[in-house]
Amino acid sequence: MKIGVFDSGVGGLTVFKYLEDVLPNYDYVYLGDNLRAPYGGRDDQTIYEFTRQAVDYLFQKENCQLIILACNTASASALRRLQQEYLPTLNDPHKRILGIIIPIAEAVPRLSKKGKIALIGTKATVKAATYDDEIAKAWGAVRPTEKMYLYKEAAPLFVPLVEEGLLENRATKFLARQYLRPLKKYRPDTLLLACTHYPLLADLLAGIMGKSCRTILPGPIVAASLAEYLQRHTEIDELLSKGASRRFLCTAPPQAFNNLSSRFLGYGVAAEQVLVG
Ligand code: DGL
Image (tube, rainbow, N blue to C red; front, top):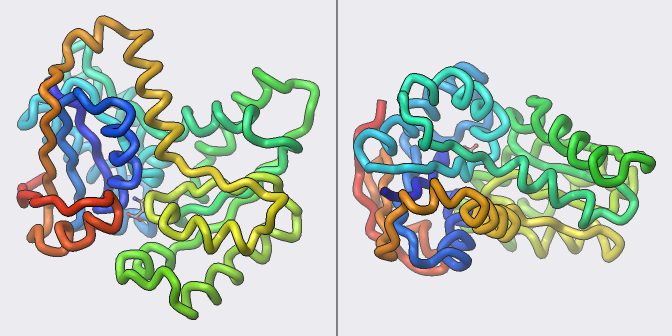
């Protein structure tokens, strides 16, 4: 049985990259719903439905045992409902859907010096209270006597700019300053890049925030957390096949996905188009 990695599109490859680095021997299937991306401006019900269809495809057609929602938007908006309403319908106690928010939230008390956290993400991620709730829970468990503040800002235009490859463009730099200005005034010590695309802008964003602010990329944290999870849950690990295979699927004609893959993953892939939903 494989590990499924789901994202609304190509961006989740920034997470997948670290998963295969840390856990190279597993069999992976990556599914990007790029026909219906971006998800970030959509309402919760639509994000839930699209994500449910995609994970159902991975479980039923691709023999996945465990699925990582590499997408911040899907993790923020749909994960809890998937676990509560959809997963029980599979009648298999060993199927798992894991998001990326809890591992990131649990890393915050260790990574933030002063508990002043800035977060940028899609509109749906920022609107959802998931990051707020999980960071507050994780912070309270580790540093209960210290205050923690979370400041959030949606930065939706980064997604098309990154996909267009405009990483160094003046328009991107201008927008980055605009998006970060309201956050900078709180003097945060930590910046969470809560969207799959933003790690490609990490240097630019870090430069704007300044040296006293640490930038956090989801990928390495999520990969370390999955490794630890599989060590703890040997009953799941035993069901996962370890043939080091990779399969890339997308819902739109694959050319655009394939062209973008090297920028997000570091090497080009040949994805297959599949019909989901
Ligand atoms: N993958 C999405 C996320 O991490 C960004 C792209 C989208 O809006 O679909 O939130």
